[in-house]
Length: 74
Image 1: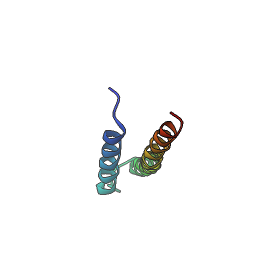
Image 2: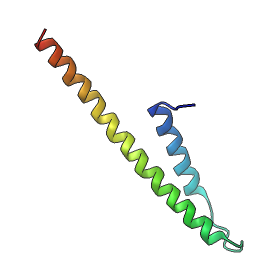
Image 3: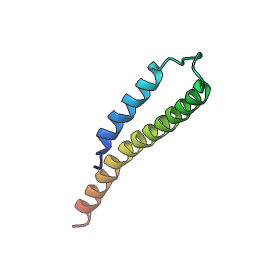
Image 4: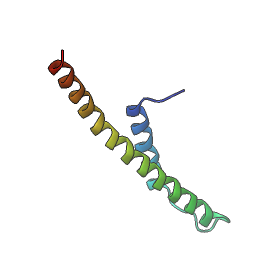
């Protein structure tokens, strides 16, 4: 199932918040690897969220330019 950009943005924010709430359990074997993986996943989620937010700023601008262009050259 494909997510809309708004749904994906919401899901990424929830993922980042969940990763931020996670408390490493230093007494568990393999925790260092899990913490590294969680940090890498968070970094990717933040980057993707940033890309989506940048695209959402550009998309309305492009639509606005197209509509002005269409009105001008009818």
